[in-house]
Amino acid sequence: MAKNKLAKFAEMETLENVFQPTHEEVFRTDYKLKGKWGEQVFGNDHPIVLEVGCGKGEYSVGLGELYPEKNFIGLDIKGARMWTGAKAANEKGMKNVVFLRTHAEELESIFAPGEVSEIWITFPDPQMAKARKRLTGTRFLSLYRKFLKEDGLIHLKTDSPFLYQYTAELVKVNHLPVNVNTDDLYGVGLDDKILGIKTFYERQWLSRGKTIKYIQFSLAGPIQLVEPEIDIEKDDYHSETQFMTRQLKVEN
Image 1: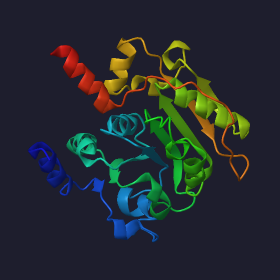
Image 2: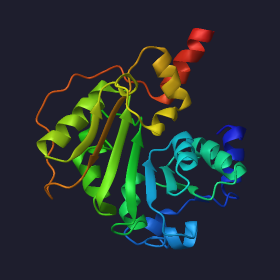
Image 3: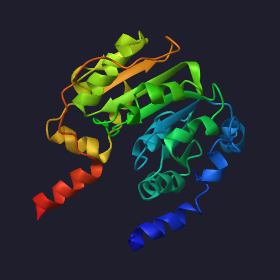
Image 4: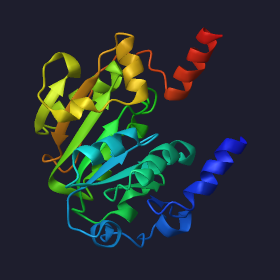
């Protein structure tokens, strides 16, 4: 492991806005902060917004700056990436943004029913080969339901045509309420200040002519969610790591 990563992991242990529960603390048991995030972490009863797969945390920090009246938790398992957002939020003195390093599969152990008001899923791996791993698939939507408020919102922002179409079809077949659904977020003229938040990689994709897709919906619908029965053409999605590798090859 690179020394830089080791240094980041070490610093993560010292940051008060980072929570790293052990496997024993969340596996088939309730985490100590379950149902207490507002009171014990943020010191208020403001709405809690969770970003699943926050990566470097740019979006959580950006949302926290835009909405100081809300609390934000960025979740990811990759600590070296998360360090960027945690460090930025700490240096800015932001009290409404924290980070949680754990697997998304453990969320039921971490949040109580109705504890989270909104969920953001920003540029996740579309997992084209395995539906059960998709963060907008029935497996994860059923999980989110266990701690999301009844009228809570889910936001998906993606550059993947595959994941966008899959999610749109899933929402459709399950008759889930949709507030916004667009395959060209910046081309439809939405009057929303969240459009001003763009991650580094999002700006790169936009500069290369890729359109950003966005769906905002809620889980008010059938208790038993079903997968869409449709063949969706796979796309040329590249993860951030693959993107940087290709960039280095081009530059060299």
